[in-house]
Length: 277
Image (cartoon, rainbow, N blue to C red; front, side, top):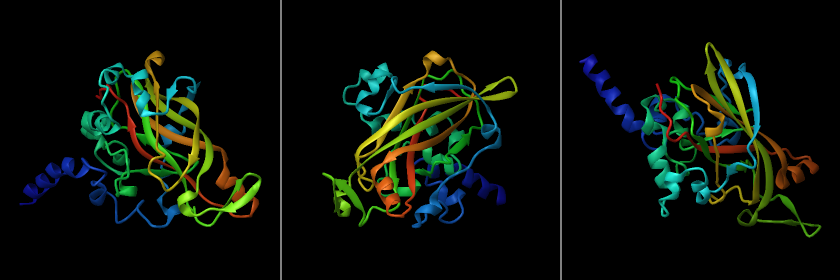
């Protein structure tokens, strides 16, 4: 009877994990990373072997990236041929859960399930990170990488009743009108295995959020860059970190002695056309 029960659990895991991190209800204890308290949701896990990896390259991809899914054909000729392709189509076809079952489990499964928007599930669809960032260690290795893509947005923990500059005056704006500009330097670490050592290839880019509204779902960024020219293979991990260059809401509140938390909500990471072994 016990063996039969274990078999049923194993058979259920793919369906549990297939939509929006529902596997988290089974794998993650309680409401971890799903708290109404903003600062309790930061995922800051770092695998030691990735944290200590030797950085062999720091690559500026500012001139090579795309930040809109509408331009995905620039680096993906197959999608360029499908003029009516949407991000939801793309997520369904190229999410990493579909490529290998090793991506089904744990907190990180939220990054690989093909759910690139909140759709009412909030923390069950995303990983929230601060400037400490996080890493993901894969249980398998890749073949040659084609390109990297990520869907995310920026937010702060308090949008209400704060002042923002307008025509050299300071106006109180309500929550529905609270737009502000924000600029970060985003660093994606791709970790490859070279014989017995792990090497870190850091891809850096400046990301601008024009008129960012932290409560509005339309301010997602689809961020991608071509990897073919770097001839990387044996990928064993990825990390996401960032530095705030400027943010009108954060900067202004600092002048008033108010600290507010700034986070990235990472919804999905893609490594299309990549095979795992």
